[in-house]
Image (cartoon, rainbow, N blue to C red; front, side, top):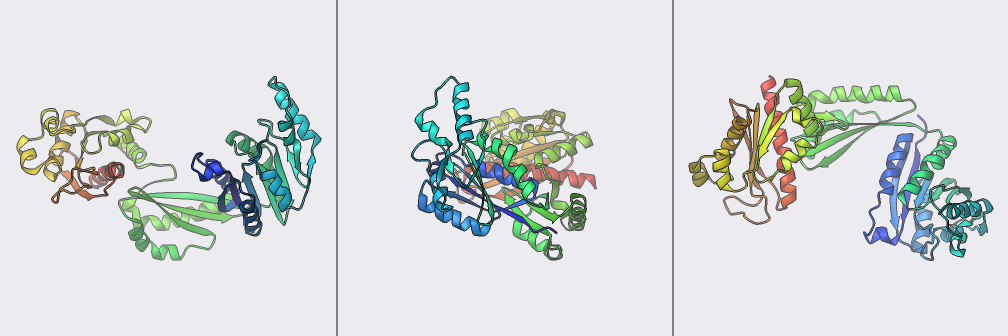
Length: 419
């Protein structure tokens, strides 16, 4: 297998450190490098500080084959990247006539004259290869120094992307013999990361060195990412798929999909295949569960509707929950969500009825029913499946976790009925 080609991304600008601007550039750059087989080994964010920039450049030169820099290329005094690169490479600043002509044409096309400040953008480190930026005035600069390839680009996202797509990626492909990198995600739900790890430990230990496993936990779910490295795509795809075939029997009951699947999209596909549908009664989730379901195109094929009886009065009068149940057991109880799921299924003439009720927080809890206590239910017309959740003190997280757990309860109900 070819030696891995590595990259570091350096994002420059005080505004990034202050949190005034979200760094979307490094995410996009990582994705594009991954597509062509370049492994990003580090991302660094630094302010407009010459010493910090020099230290970052020194470290990157020891770490990566390719260094991609964004930011600090404007015409004002706080844009320091060009001057720092001159110092770092022991170079000098010189006028690039073709860069000057490109900047002049850029302003002329917009009916403006070239100012002395903008003229300064044509002065670049003498050791760089000038890369034209046809969508802006800040030039791109390509260096081949210290055993690495360096590219300095503006921080404006559309300008950076133009330079990457039209100049940098073609140069990288020409300069390096790139390996193939292939990813596949296995989506699991209803099991924590550590428990999952225990189940698949022996399988994980037998993975070959060129196939790596990563655990990617999120709210209520764990994604397993298998990454294969090789010289040709078809063999590595087959190897990854063969490994997944060995994995699936171990955790089949937790797997709901792959790659871009979401739990909502996977359930939608299953309901369509089975010609079944759902209705929802939401209390503590306040419509969020319905939002997750209806975010999937084609949800009208299986989602009949929902009721959000947030107040107990409407649980009784709109939904038909027994006043005796509410009085004796309370809204946050197994008995109440059973009635909610049963009644909403009947009202919407649905295959399944889902219900949620809980203490979302941060207030409203008690010793008996603390913040984060939630009951969910799924009724299939014959049996009602319920679950009690004890979640967090955070309201938004509780709403999201309850919605994910409710969809998983529906998934488990469908799996049971499939037997």
